[in-house]
Length: 179
Image (cartoon, rainbow, N blue to C red; front, side, top):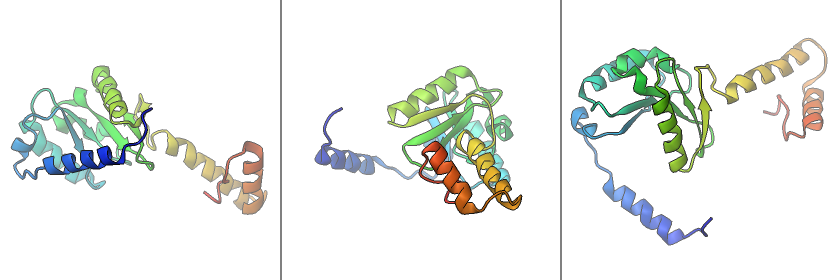
């Protein structure tokens, strides 16, 4: 690894900022796009309407991804006009990590390209090869939290004891109630 060069980083940010361009014509904005990342509110109908406007103006080469954290990509694949080039790239809680989720029609080639893209932008790509609500982290986290709640509501122990059992038993910094 190279040592951090503050001035080089500031110069790179300045170049990136100076190259930003606001384009209100969707067709012009995506005319030469290799990748389009949709990052809208979790509103199914609004996303469908967006994809229906986007699909007719996209070049054939363009891969489309959603940044949705709760909606599965298969919900929208048919509206993109390119289900084989459509998947999810979710920037997770920590900005340096992300989940990449395929849907049934995603061509593996584009999945692999997106994993490579994430790696190139210095992110830790977490491949999700099959659609799953909650991706990886929340698919494990929610049952764990519910297990702690079950122990409490069943009268097995109190939150402090449950958390202490977890932290001492696993070495984790927090138990389900502190989380």
